[in-house]
Amino acid sequence: MNSAAIYAGTFDPITKGHLDVVGRAAHIFDRLVLAVAGYSRKTPLFSQEERMEMARDSVRVFDNVEVDIFNGLLVEYARSMKINVVIRGLRAFSDFEFEFQMALTNRKLAPDIETLFLMPNEDYSYVSSSTVREVAELGGHVEDFVPESVQRALQSKFGIHA
Image (cartoon, rainbow, N blue to C red; front, top):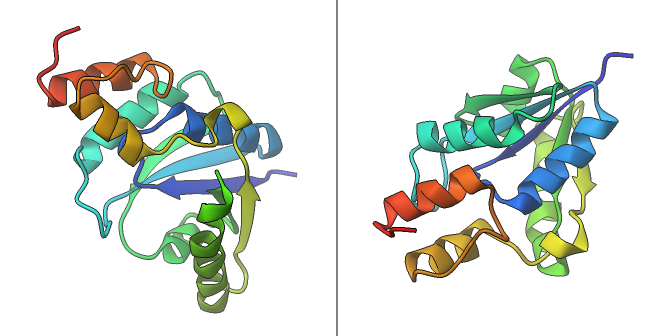
């Protein structure tokens, strides 16, 4: 069976927690599309192209993972890709309410598309992109939270010299 899934997010920036979920999903599915969202209620630190480039660099170790950009509704993007499984990461109980609401909304919009929740390793259950951005902006070390290329991008963005 040729199975596929989409793991979508803003990935601003992509973290080791995201990559842990990518690895878990890549193990389950034959093909995984890491979809970098353009629209966000938040103002991203990195452009969509920068986020896509960091994601590409970070997932290159996985043979069955590709990176793409999407704008608009995730379920419409999934349909356009002919993929009927969406991966969502759950770090902590605090994520559940939002993710549950989104999954039910997506189910109402597209009953043919399933949402699968994956939890990252507990080592990454507290890591969020917003926390990583804040630590980096204040000059803290982020190497435990993000790949090296992302760490360099954060240092460059905030004018920090290693």
